[in-house]
Figure 1 (tube, rainbow, N blue to C red):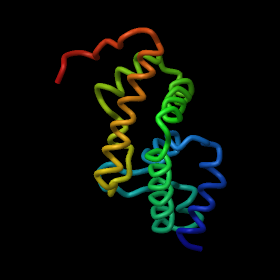
Figure 2: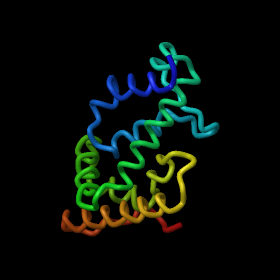
Figure 3: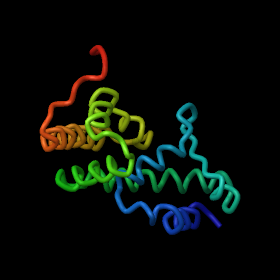
Length: 146
């Protein structure tokens, strides 16, 4: 068994329950050690080996990222709305945090090219502004400006 088998297993068992690329990208980023860049998933590692599991997680992470980059702005807004609902956060708090802290920047695959990153980050900022406007209130900054 190899990384392709591990990726298929990951898609079938775990990622199938995450229909939105944003959710998949955020989830897969959470399986990566931010100090080393190594991905780890206990179940995949025990079944396919650590190296194959790491490669499968990385491949699926890049796949979710590409889907998100090619999502329409309208679809991206819907994905963030759904994420806000599933996160059970106050929508304005989430918008504030995402605007100020930009946590999505650490959720992208480590070897992403500059142009797709710029497109995604720009689209996320626009989508957040649309959502903020739809909520009918300007978000208040979280503490002093950096």
